[in-house]
Length: 352
Image (cartoon, rainbow, N blue to C red; front, top):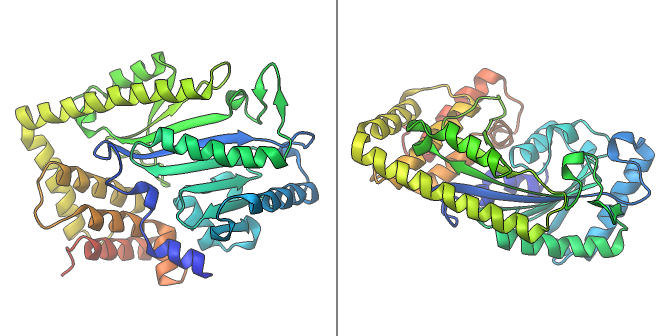
């Protein structure tokens, strides 16, 4: 494993920092643009030789990006299983690209920016930031997109906009999403109403899923859906306005819960603390859920000897690929769960 992957395995995910803008409720922002090269078949139709030519062209153009020396480019078929799982856990690649023979990725050292090549589209240009950072993400995304656009002829229609493999991305090719902690709305039974409200405004609100497909309570992904016939700036400003309404609703629900039934929150947090302290086996999804519940307790002032940095570090080390990177070996499910429980206890100061 080279130095880049060793560094990934040893540090917190910067875009999931627990102290970003609006971070008590907005955990992270992800913004991406789907782009394709004119005259080329889409990745699912490309043979290996043509696919690798596209990959090489995009890698070559990336040398024009600012601070190119801080970028890392990889053909995914040259990486081992742990390295690919590490990129998957850190949201730089997809499950589909893991098994592709023509996919590649470009990642900056800080991990705020990446380009996934030959997945669903020729390029998925992506920016990830901690907390709520829509406009800052968009500014950098367009800057990078302009550089690629000057070197590569994009597949574009005057009638429809940017053409993509999936009809839902045709138009701007833009997708915005935020990871939210909506524990207050979840516990107060208001979450279904918010799901319906999001749909009315043209957004999608779904419970987030960990890699084991477990849906942790209170954690949701809010994303844009419409890309055709709407300007990017309008999409972003309307989305931010809706997010601010969600933040207000979640804040009110937490205040009301603490005033009317604080024991429910305290019990939830205490159970999470007890499970992390006394369980000697934890699966990946359970650890993530419990640690974010501890984070809620920190926000509400329920802990004195715990800080956000400890929770960040524990979240990072709880992923399967991160554990195997640290241990430098493939582990069985049982060994993963044992190692995870031990390492999380150490990170949050609960080790014997």
